[in-house]
Image (cartoon, rainbow, N blue to C red; front, side, top):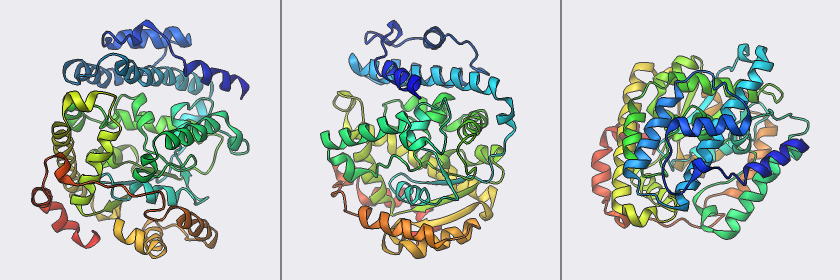
Length: 402
């Protein structure tokens, strides 16, 4: 692991002409830089180039991101290309991994701010399930080893990063549950296929493309990364969580035919209001002022409304056996009863050891334990009435879960 620690320090100081704050590069420039820095050539399939090109075109044409903020956006894109090269190098040396099963992943989804993180963090406490941690996504090679992962330098860096972030910006803790050992949205895994959603960037043209894109190649690559990550770290029943799954559930089902979607629900007025605030808090420096708060909220609102329409239609096609529904309100007021119902729906045994860990977690992370996140739709030019009217198709279908 010593070499890994050195590499992480080097990656934290990425300096390459392709990351210039003066201009957005072409996809081939970023790809050449990744190959040069890693001394590797094989990206294994080029389907990802379409998404990379769409993203860079959108950043160039509409983001209004300038100067050092531009470099900050490019650094993780270069890192994901480098990770892709290393993933392929690893698979070439470990060919049996690509034949391993990734059985029945539990995929938590719904509108953002509907309890996906709380539920994902709770299920991550169960030794029967395998969480997808942020630190192993950001640097997946070498795959973590169960016996030594507590001291893995990637994990230690993550702990320090979260602590520093919350110290510098305490509001972060009120807005989101940060847990080094819990499952986290798979931005970096899908990002290696250049199929991440990118809601914290002003790139609506990219998201329009993304909503309609065939995501089966991206999720096939997603499975390839999970095969790597589970190779030395059991179990193999993954718990994954991401609001963006609702946009492409049919494509996910094609790659993971035994997946289970756990669909979280909350009053969309509260969910949307909270998410407007969350997104703008995480925009690149200066972008909110240039782009405009109401414009950002309008873009995100349209995107999520379209996503929920897609999800409801896909659910009708897939059938109810794929889904378990969870009320965010009930999860917070009757945590244990809700979890028992989720486990019954998943066909998983609900153990006393798991409940004991949940009880300990709940005492530290109950609603309001880390401060209060204040927000209102009116802050960005929306009304409760508009949101309720636009999402009526959803609340009428799932109202009993709100």
